[in-house]
Image (cartoon, rainbow, N blue to C red; front, side):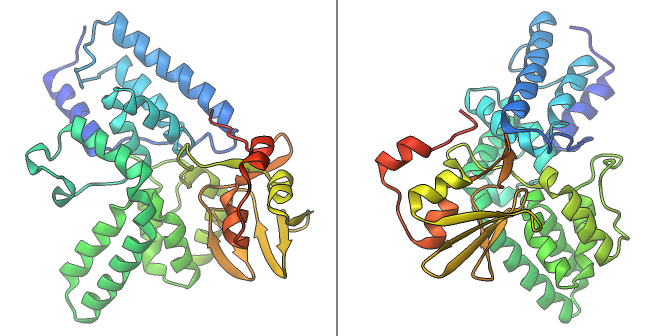
Length: 329
């Protein structure tokens, strides 16, 4: 295999370990099937390169064309994460760097069960898989805890401690963006640079928001780009078309074209779900969904749990057999 200079190899390896690099989230408008197809093409191109160049699967060093092909996977952005995670679970731990670059999630030394493996790429890849399935569910709680901690130390004049806490908030990655945006909506402008940092790659992504943006500019940018920066659900989420989901839960539903929303009702309760938004509205209050609803073949696809959880009902297995929809399988 032809390699660049030793210095170049070190730089590339450090970039993979730290999870930095240019990320352009450009597949947000694709359906899951389209994203999966594009991912498979780019992944196979990388594998063919590795095979043709005689690179060992244990060799983490990719340079030149190999590094370019690696970055093409990260350019698919958050929508490709379910498929990247699947490849890691199948043994291609090298893709852990892709997860790091896309999500901006950072692990601290204290996160490692055995600190001897702190920074080890193979260990980190396994940790990203665990975070994907379980850890990221705690992001909102962790964000709120760090936010309150930062406010407390800042009020006490402990500026270095406040800066350290801010860094930890950034280390939660783009999984924290929906929560951060909620705080920006409450006019906490100090968090706008955090939005900018989490949505910028090395050298800046073309669709990133400026750290100097106003509250209005930040919120407008998010409403336009949130589908590209919202983490997709893990593949064990059960999906269903809106009307079918309503049928099996006994709810009524209609499409509000003016609001671009599906409105479900049952026993006096009202659930409003919009494509591209991870938060629904239940009786006027926010409801966090397991996944981000999307439009496929002119139908609104949403997690079935949106209705079963909101209305406190269970769908029988016989009913689910007729309506369950899993676009990732």
